[in-house]
Image (cartoon, rainbow, N blue to C red):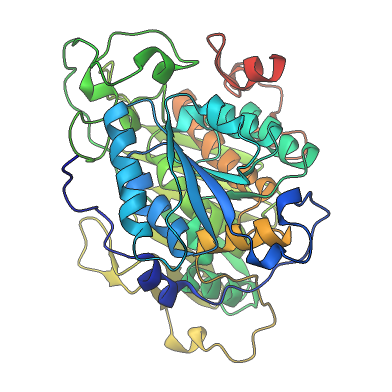
Length: 458
């Protein structure tokens, strides 16, 4: 098959230069795959399965996983046969530059067949948000360790079930909140938690917007797509390319703008930034107590995720967290002695000439690394950290209990935005306080036989 060059320019060897040296984490009493035990274990490479071969898999998960050079893909699965073939070809192209012999990579149209293979140690799941809970739970139950793209789940209820499943099946889990493995985010949180801004009073999260567009008419289902399986637990609706992903190429898919499949930027980017905010606030296993939000929701039936938004969350210690599309894309921590800002790169405030560095402060002296009282876990690359933890059975940078709590804050914000009124949240009970309407939004119906509930029954 003739393919255009892969979207990700990094070879396995090239990426290793940037990714080497992740620190080991504290051990957990987890189950080590029997194939990796024994005196010859260090020479055994991990055997991996890739579930999902779309944009994020091609540009991020597959290249970074192979670059870690601790394992080999032996299986790849996708519901689009064209993407499946191109995903396998990408794996083989990248593997050519590796030191180990190129593995046999088998293709599958059904993720269940991947999970039935006893020789696979771990899977990387790079699929639409609404499928995360089902696929990850099934993988955990089958004895696989899981790297799951963010956000963790579509609902709070799914998150609770998935978090508990990681513990029940004693598996290694990593959420794709890769900012935790990026140095400036860790440094910012160490500085804040060491008191550089004084008493923390307020945090701002800036997220981008998603545009909408008029609904496209229904189209015939492409022969290369298993559309019924793609819809999974969501309502049965007519196919249109606008709803799913591009038939050709790997541009940003339409499913990210439909609220049956994704909640919008509040979880899309929010999963990253809430995670860092919680890290800096030292509330990784907690959550807000009160949330009030407003947002513009399009009337279109397909691209209907939220538009402009503003959310206020109250946390213990009288810390206020504000989320808005009017802020710079990043996280700004305010204290009574100054502020520290962190983002992936230089950021600008919408409608303003102000620009902030990837790690910035109201006074450069606040960024002096000397004398910090808090040192946080670190890794040099997120996928490498996951694979190292699969071997060592250590805690990953983004384990399920922490990932679930930051995702919950995103979802609770979305619920407040949808209701357009304040809600009280009990972080310990993981329920709204005396609010039946809001509590109904913590779960969603699932169309059998799909969804985490139906898989749990099977």
